[in-house]
Length: 265
Image 1 (cartoon, helix red, strand yellow):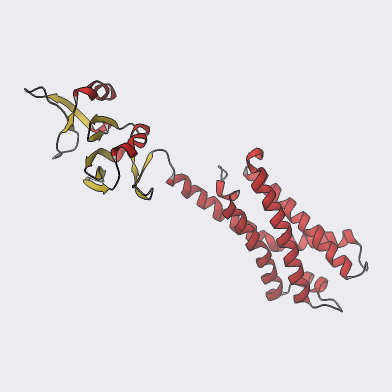
Image 2 (cartoon, rainbow, N blue to C red):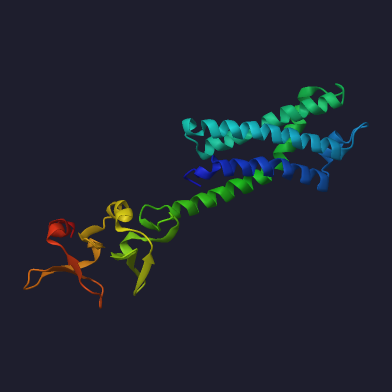
């Protein structure tokens, strides 16, 4: 967990904490009725389930405010794992203060407020450590997967509706060819050459091609210079690029683009 995952401070990540923490605490207390919580919450005038529900609402309110603040300030804080753990510990500490305030008021001052704060802090830490750890690990895993997906070495081909249709390493792409309303992406998969027809225009792919080093070699072609074996000029002066993959057609190279392609080798 070296690189801090963006999902931890994104809306969906914060919503996960907002929903999970209070519900986990309520379920844990009602199902297992740990002695510490049972002793504190089973009062003469109110039941354990009633008090646990009120405390769940308090936890929800604290996490809601905490996560709203985090959403607003996380960019300026340059969040890291150490900062996130500190934030979560502060979150639990503030929960403990408000829960202790409720319990103290319900007991009409029978117990000292700071005594109850200590009990609540201990109880919340023991209970909420499970969802905090699970969510942190889950989002660390998701962050790693998203990092792989958005690796700059991967080319992401989208169609005219901006839907992702093909994602592939740039080194595997041989060339891209226009064909009426489609472009054909020719790429290597293991030892086999594959063709993916994509409903898109060459113009819409221009930025993607340049970013990953594919060169315009003719009006209807982009070619990957990594796979050019040799450039040939025939008797009629027509230039073509021979690929380093057997049984593939030669790709035409216009005089207009010849110099750029030659420099790219």
